[in-house]
Amino acid sequence: MKFSKINKAYLLLIFSVIGPGIITASVDNDPGGIAIYSVAGASFGYTLLWTIIPIIILLIIIQEMCTRMGVVTRKGLSDLIRENFGLKATFFIMIALLFVNFTNTISEFAGVAASSEIFGISRYIGVPLAAIFVWVIVVKGSYKKVEKIFLLASLFYLTYIISGFLAGPDWKTAAKEIVFPSIQFNSSYLIMIIGMIGTTIAPWMQFYLQSSIVEKKVRLKNYKFTKIDVVIGSIVTGLVAFFIIVACASTLFASNIKINDAADAAIALKPLAGDLASELFAFGLLNAAIFSASILPLSTAYCICEGFGWERGIDKKMKQAKRFYALYTFLIVAGAAIILIPGFPLLSIMIWSQILNGILLPVVLIFMLLLINNKDIMGRYVNTRLWNILTTAISLVLILMSIILIFSYL
Image 1: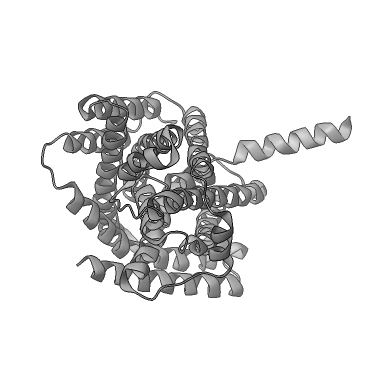
Image 2: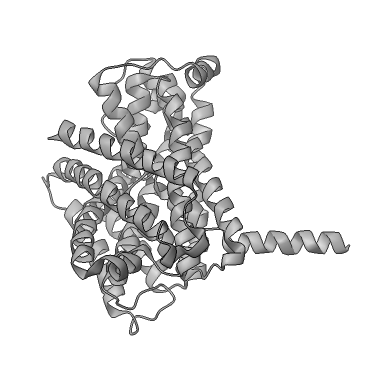
């Protein structure tokens, strides 16, 4: 009986801490990410499946550093940058992040428009309803309630795993491509790899994750559970990406059908994998779009308000954090409104958002490495030598990939 009570208390402690890592990693699979994985499967078949394992490892390493800084310092990343590098550096990073996140928010509402129209709902109805929904759940809720809603939204990504099985993949070929990959050395293949990594590790994630850890008030003694949270979130995100590629590889690639985005994939799956697989894929896109459309503006509001020392947080009332809620509201209203403008150059905005993501990510990683190796800030929780070698190598690879991605777009 005593043993049972100890186990129950241990599980309750784990569940009280987990959340930020799973939510942040899940939002990686936003409409842009789903589009990239769909195109990867449709264009290259199973040959890019081998990238999922290193992508999961990259995500775990980078997010672990954010959670460690959040738990040890009890401050967000924007706060730490402002306190240690000054207001000028913070200002330029915040402006860049604001623009990048705004363009990404537009992309999320584009996903809402595309997926709602698959189900026969006009974008002029679907987009405003989604905007109202994501605004209400954050503005009218507490952190605990909002986190529960976000965790529930994360569960709906399982629809992609079901779609993957329903597509009837060739599991032997898939397994072979993971263990003995058929790597191609051409520009389109390499750019697709960079795009897959870029959509998985975005600048906004590091700011949002650390801010969530701080608002959740995770204590240092419970840090080991936040690591479990990060690992679970990263693995689940990788699995979802894996099954998106598998679903498109086994149907679209096999039938030589070309697509441009996730909505194309959902429609094209219907005659090849059946109505259920197509509808689950489309529902997954709608869920991802709404989920991301709430997280991206929320992340931006946290970052900007932290950077300039303004009151922020879902647990704050609107009167206490006027700038926080005003910024969150503006991003949602403006992002949704732009999607409803006929003939708006959405593709150009999406491309430039990826370019700016590529420029900003290396800058954010450099600041993170400088902060986490500062003993005055982190004490004995600075990176170990091995961790520094790994993170420095990862940062250099990501910087190189970002440069290649930027030049490929330009």
